[in-house]
Image 1 (tube, rainbow, N blue to C red):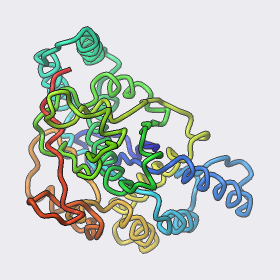
Image 2: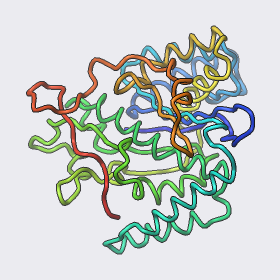
Image 3: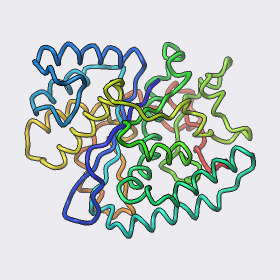
Amino acid sequence: MKIGVDASGTFAMGEGFEPTVTAAAIGSTSTFEEIAGWTRDTLKRWGEHKLTELHAKELSAGKFHEVCDMLGSRDDLRLAAVITDSQLMRSAAAVARHRERQRELAEATRATTDEGHRRRAAVLALLDDPKLRGPAYAFGATLPVLVVLALQQALVRFRRDADRDDMTTIELLVDSELARTVEYTSGALLPIIGGDPRFTLLVPKEWSDEPMHPLLLRANHPDGEGLRPQELLSAIEYVDSKEHACVQVADIAAAVVRRRILDPSNAEWRASFDLLQPLLAGADGRCFEIFSISPLREDQVSMYSHLHGSQPPWWLAPSTGSASANCYQEPAVGPFTV
């Protein structure tokens, strides 16, 4: 399985209103090969000879809609998104304080193995790196939230026996323009956020039946409590979007959501967003998470609430002891040690 990641926006801080959306596209290799084939044929039909990929900045609203119509018609594709804006990021000083708090958490993280000590040292070095500041750090801070949302989409939507081979490994592929933050994420992905309820994962209970699902077998924590998030991902790489349709789809999704926020009265962008909304919807119909440097106020949540949809009928529900086939939940991901 592949998770492609890209962002739309600049992670502006504190001036006016400027939204930024980070998005992920989740699907199998064959899914994205088919989308890549559709893209080649469509760019040729459009006469876009200079384009070799789906690139949000190069497409008109009408072409965006055609792309979203194609994506929305697929039942083998899921999307995830994280929204923030210049007011939620508050200021460069607030972001810097957030980074310092993350460093304190990383410094206090208990390492029990040589690999854990190496990972901890790498995270501290990156958080001390002057290059990882401002927007670069902001993206790195939102990315773990997005990855967990994408993993949850994958675990629920692709839980069938027919998907087992595809779900044996999950690769995270991030647009190379965001390469610096990939270093931060690959070192820090979830080791310092244990206990945060946003990082609870629902896992199909049948995956524990013999033979245990290979992904679960690899990610189960040795003490039997929860999962090791790092083990859910087989690779974290930064890539050229031209070569990876999953990153291109993430770019489209991020741009559509952002433009829907920026221009709510625009019927074309609203129609494109509506086509993608079912692919974004998860538990309780939530289509995204909101990232804020400070605790969210009610008014900050409500300004985006109209963009959520309906929970998919096949979504897993928390376990209540029922024998129902869809009522399964694994323990929370954290806390854990590196």
